[in-house]
Image (cartoon, rainbow, N blue to C red):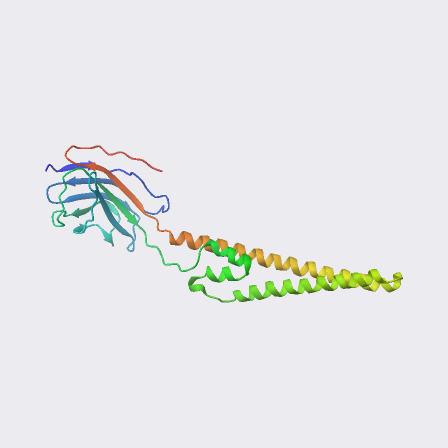
Length: 245
């Protein structure tokens, strides 16, 4: 089989990670192995580089005997080289193949929940904030539940007392007798408004926090991958092309 050289191109690069850059993939194919040469920038020791090899007729292969600048610990630089000894894997390449070089950054494990937990905070303030914490640490968050519940209960009690005082005020026959009950109803109503508004602020703050923290957790969990796909390599030399999205 004739060894061929392909100038590699960026076929599809994930926008999720702007640090890693893989480019200029070149592929040589002979009767024993596939040689992949590529350029990479901004790798760190914990990042991983790996390949995917696809046959036009037979679909994806599962390369096992892969050596060179692959896996973790690959240095940044030009002309990094990967070898896949496909004959040692018992593979016969009888048609065109396409090679994809992928660089995957390390993603720290995040155990906190996602933004949907904000719905739980909407029902029980403080609950969603617990579930979005790493390992669901409780911390001071039960205070949120107690504060919200206490303010709401206090406000409802004050509202009830305001209604009772106002009813008594309406039943009085003279203004001097009625005025103290009116003032009492007004005071209770004011306390009701203050308590319920503060409770609403606590509720809104907790729901917002749970949503934003959950969104942040979700972004950390999604692994970003930079990949470069070389064009098909076979018995006819092929020019590469580039595309970004």
